[in-house]
Amino acid sequence: MYTLAGLFGGVGGIELGFELAGFNVIWANEFDKNAAVTYQLNHSHELRVDDIHNVEPDDFPDVDILTGGFPCQAFSIAGYRKGFEDDRGNLFFEVLRLVEVKKPRVVFLENVKNLVGHDNGNTFRVIKGALEANGYKVRDKVMNGCEYGNVPQNRERIYIVAFLNEKDYEKFEFPSTIPLERKLRDVIDFESKVDDKFYYTPEKCKFYDELERNIVSSETIYQWRRQYVRENKSGVCPTLTANMGTGGHNVPLIYTKYGIRKLTPKECFNVQGFPLEFKLPANLAMSHLYKQAGNSVVVPVVRRIAENIMTALNANGNYEPPKHEDSEQLILQLI
Image (tube, rainbow, N blue to C red):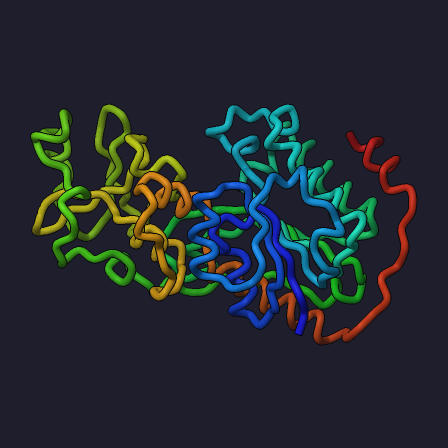
């Protein structure tokens, strides 16, 4: 069974997708202590809770796959587009530091769609070039969760798969689109009463009149956009964000017979395609759980990509990784 180590694990969405595809996850790293609580509640393999700057190649075993959804704020539209000038953007080079030594057979990365066009494409060019300088052949694709994962969420992300073995690269293809069969009601409970804290009332909400006037259908999802209500007419949930449930303007809202409310954290994880049995800690604040859901991945999309990676690896069997020297100089030329 192919082994895997995960960087920037969050709550383990990427690792879960690969596990469901048949990979053996043996180690992961996550900096956020609250996310680590959720991670360890759902995974039994070793999790190192530490800053990635402190993680050395000797801290985890040699693996076939190295994954990472490195922090994307530096590349997102909401993150001021600073890219590599932002410390969070530079975290890619921490991934690269470990890749250079460990030389995993496959590197899997996930990030926001905006990474592709940031700085007129220069940011992505450096990332791709840095992997190629270390001997990897790179494939990438922007994929939407509602088109490739059968989840009712509009969530576009860039997926990068880099292969050290050219034969693996040649055998790999990204998954094709599939029909969206899962509906909002399959992942969101419009019928049952939930805890009162999720409902908006005139007493708790100064803009309740606007909500009541505009949120009238239980067949769709709404958002409060600071000064107005926006209905999402596409029949799917808008992109979940890390600031859900903290007063941010991207809180998904629904109309139920018990009143207007925001999605529960569990529903947010459902919208991301996490299995129903995925556990959420009872002792964490709601704001942490919303952040974890918004920062995570669409698990079924990751699983489908992982299954295709498995197919490519199985087609070629074992191999000896080649040695590539002087990659640092090549990377410096790219920057």
